[in-house]
Length: 314
Image 1 (spheres, rainbow, N blue to C red):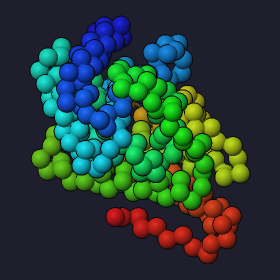
Image 2: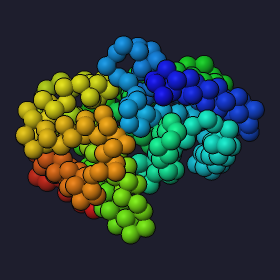
Image 3: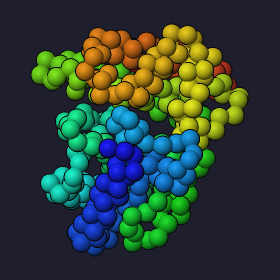
């Protein structure tokens, strides 16, 4: 199946999803604001010849976010409504839909190598308290999205989001991210008690990608300008970047990640859990020691604090 055929399947899915949301209790609920597509697919649709594009050769993903302004109770209720819509759609689609919940929970669905597999990254976002989410997340969502349906057109761009800063709040979020990835991979390895090796590979592969992205903002010193839009171009010249800031061993891991992207279905069958888990550990350790710890030292000096204590496990 070529990329054009895959895109047609995705577009059909988005049309069906939009119709179901517009006919559901979600659309009529007072808290509902908008349903958007974000991430690499939104970027790619706006500029097919640009740097950012779905991972067509491995597991292309699509980021779909439903934005509300309501209570936590309403938030959970609408999440349940959305889940039921996705459940209905899985029986109507001509391809295999996977649910990617990292770094908060394990992923759901099994890869079917005889069909097109689309990884769905989705959540309901509550705009009632913008501080519930890191500013760099809001910045990322605002920087590339398009609406599928909306009660308030261009609602996301109307929200006041400060430009992300690499400050103490950012450092804490980075710590939480790295700790979450590490915990999740440790749990994934233990789950090989029940899961097939290929499933564990799929999980750890996702977290290597996340570490590689976060390592970009952590590599640059605080006094240097960092453009968060560079993270969207994370596949461009990444091996050279990692060798410069994290060393040759880290570069080797990034090159292996690129190989997995290029020939994913072969890799998930041939690469052992110990190998890919070891690669994750090497990359995480490099980003943590040479990125996070160095930025922590800088911010401690800038803020004139003696110590910033952060536990590695939680």
